Length: 280
Ligand code: 13P
Image (cartoon, rainbow, N blue to C red; front, top):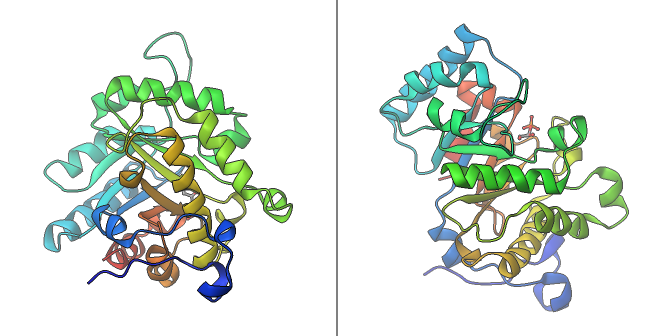
C-alpha cells in the first residue's frame, strides 16, 4: 500500500509542525502516477564529435536497458539536428534550450519554436536563470516564449528559482510564486508544461538544498499550480542544481519531486545514466 502522509520539513516531527508551515500534504499516490523526467541541459557545451558521441552512448544504454524514467537531452542549437539523427528510434527525447516569442522574423541570432520542432525537438527549456540573469529575461518575455512554444506543439520546461540573497531573506516562496505567475501563460496543462525548480545558488556550485527543503518548495509550487492550471496534480516538478549520481536518489525521493534537470553531470554519459537509474 502506498503511504499518504505529510512531509515534515527539515526532519521536524510531524505533530510539532503547524499546518501553515507544512502546506498541502504530498500525495504519494499522485506522485507515483507522474512518470519521472530526467532532463540533461548541455548548456553551451559540445562540438559535433563529442556531442554526437555522448548522444550515441546514451541511446545505446537506453536501448540495452530501457529506463523507467522519461529521458530528455537538450544540446546546444548547433547539435540539434545531428543529435536528432542519432536519437532516431530511441526513447530519449530532444529539447531546445530557449526559443523566441515570435514564430519567425528578423531576430538575428535567435531561434524560433517551429525551428526547434523542425529539428526534432519535443521540449524547450524556458526561463533558465542563466538567461534571466545574462540576457535580462523578464517573466513577461518568458511568458511570450512559452506561448510560442505552445502554439508550436513544444512542451515547456519552465525554470524558476531564487538567488542566495533571496533565500537568506526568507523570500524563496515569494520569488518562485512571482516567477510562476508571471511566466506561465493561461491554459497550459500538464501535457505541455513541466516546472523546474532551480535555486540559482545551487547551479554549478556543488551545493544543494536538503531534500526536505526541496520538498517544501516543491509543495509550495504545487499549491501555486493549483491556482493556475486545470490539472495541477499531473504537472511534473523537476529539481535542478548540482544533481549528481551521489545525491540523485535522495533528491528524487523527496516529496513532489518528479525528476531532475541536470547540467554538468549530463555531459558525462555514465553520470547521466546513473541519475536516470536513480529515478527508479
Ligand atoms: P548543474 O547541474 O551543473 O548545477 O546545472 C543545473 C542547471 O542549471 C540545469 O539547467
